[in-house]
Length: 101
Image (cartoon, rainbow, N blue to C red; front, top):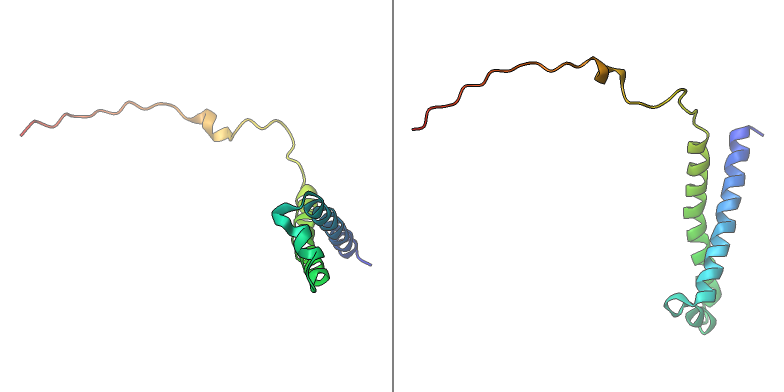
């Protein structure tokens, strides 16, 4: 299996694990009375699975993007701006005042 595919699968799994923890915290803290709504509804289990799955999609995408962007090469040397800035010199400019009307 290619490394990129393996990386994607592992990050998706981590995203869904983070989603499960997030939904557990939502239910534990009873945010917006969510625990009561899920526990006392006929389709509460379906709602719970949908909340977990939708958040899992979001967290998996963020997790994969974070990992990919973290793999970027770091620039070498100190970051002190562009070298062009050091070559600029002030130039005298003459300006004439307009006569009042």
